[in-house]
Amino acid sequence: METRTCDVAIVGAGPAGLFAAFECGMLGLSCVLIDALPETGGQCTALYPEKPIYDIPAHPAIEAGALVASLERQVAGYRVPRLLGQRVDALSGARGDFRLRTDRGAEVRAKAVIIAAGAGAFGPNRPPLAGIEAYEGGGGVQYLIREREAFRGRSVAIAGGGDSAVDWALALRGIAVRIWLVHRRDRFRAAPASLAQLALAVGRGEIETVVPYQLHALHGGGGMLSGVSVATLDGEVRLLEADRLLPFFGLSTDLGPIAEWGLQTGLHGLVPVTPSTLETSLPGVFAIGDVASYPGKLKLILTGFSEAAMAAHAIHAIARPEQALHHEHSTTRGVPAA
Image (tube, rainbow, N blue to C red; front, top):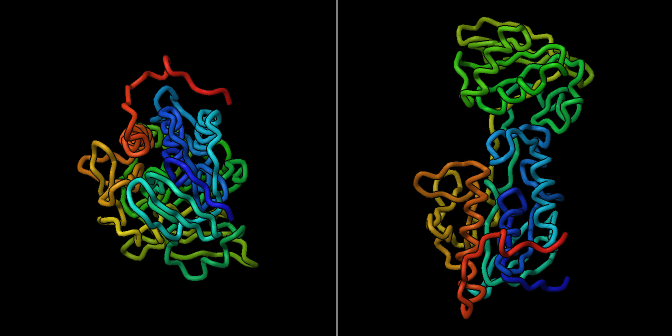
């Protein structure tokens, strides 16, 4: 395969990576987007395209898939090449002249690299229930929701105590005929606004909270789920006649080959960066979004957008050392037509 040459190689095509491509385009820097997934959007596309997001500026609410579609329209004018369904296996070279090679043999030469890989490769944490594998893949146990309509008329048990569990319980109201929200504690770790909505939904009988219980056993036949047993720590067991189980116990993540690039890494595979530039311990390599770590970091999509702009401006000095960067507002600079 031919070698692609650009100013910036962006590893990860989720929201932060897409916006980084736009910001680089605004500064006249060429990019290539690389992602192991077959489509852009990262977790927003792969895990919860219909999940509403409430903290994107100027959008009181926007579904994750719609956010990705808007980011694609925003960057379209820069015609950024993509290498999708490809994992970056190797990085060599130095600041100003890097070579990246993917597992499909593609090579990219870039003056700088932005890691926007979220938390790396990801997958759901599976609850330790005997025989759960028999109900995965269409039998009733699901770790993500691509389409809410798939749950119409279903009886759904949702397990977990964080934002995902609470948000999806709320989102499935009026679609599922019954919703149980199972948690081992009587307090949920979700946004205050979501907890207020949950209290109202419980009061109206739209959702039943099952606390303090945890998953105990699955029931069914022929690979199809028909019930979920839950139990207290004292051994009290209750059967929920659910034909769908959504366990939301977080994601297991792995930086994969990125961890072998010689970067300093911290807890949970996060990459420490200089807050003012987002540069990692390896000169010329930057990290933005969930994978980047520094004191006071907020893991929000909007934080990743800000980091994308800061990294692009820092990279301009690497890609165009002979050219002074005069900051221009987007209203004066404009953008190319899609």
